[in-house]
Length: 319
Ligand code: C5P
Image 1 (cartoon, rainbow, N blue to C red):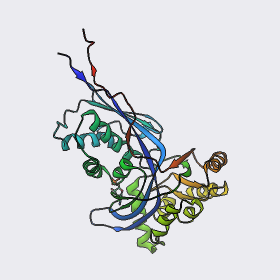
Image 2 (cartoon, rainbow, N blue to C red):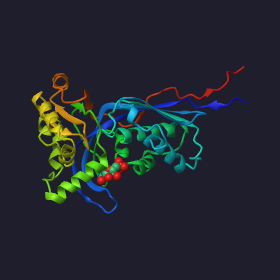
Image 3 (tube, rainbow, N blue to C red):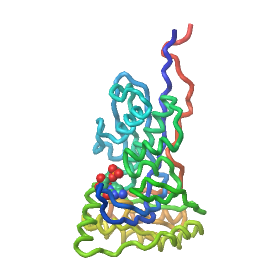
């Protein structure tokens, strides 16, 4: 009899920017209640999950050196969580997870969460699990607050820790320039810094999210630009004061508005259209305020299988 090995599955997964990130007070469980609008961006990671005799994780590409290629990797934890959920032996996973990074590491763009979401979709396909999106979302939420959003993609309003999602109507493709910083920032450290700043004097908090939702529905990037906001920005800038200069440089280069992406230190600049984004990117990369500049657009779909070779392959050729 022929042993049949399912072919590797590759999943492409987006990054995210928070167009509005309203942070509530610290909860007893160590998280903060959020009111946030996520948008999935075309800056992506690819994650391949394959049956393998030498299980483990490999990381290549943007910032790969600083991503753990161990069982602490969020993608590996996601595969384990899915195996447990499906009643498989999570301590004996015969799979290899290969991550190709385009999303900056520890950059505030949900790069680690994206790899976890992609690994979930890939492993579910590899193991041919009969699991719906809602069930997969529940597993995703156990891995991290941003994992459900990058699984779904598009534009969505997030509440709770950010894991409770409602899709948001948008009428336009928005064009972004992203400035990668020279280092990363730890998400818990940035939330901790916000708690500290608030204990000292309560910096102004973002207002209601509704005007931003209306701007998204109108599709007008100028209107949207005036409403972008992030309560974590004061904390990221406090930890990385040079970000102030980067934010200024992006607007001086012609962007409609600039914000810190999530907990940072990546900064995101909304532009009028695709041409404007290219011009802003060129000028910003010459300004010497960041490590790398990329253009991206959004909204884009969530984690999706991109390898179309889904037929099982025999391990030995048939007679
Ligand atoms: O959910 P995730 O593991 O990505 O969160 C990382 C850390 O970010 C949490 O341990 C917490 O310190 C902080 N966080 C928070 N409130 C949220 C999401 C994250 O305080 N809503």
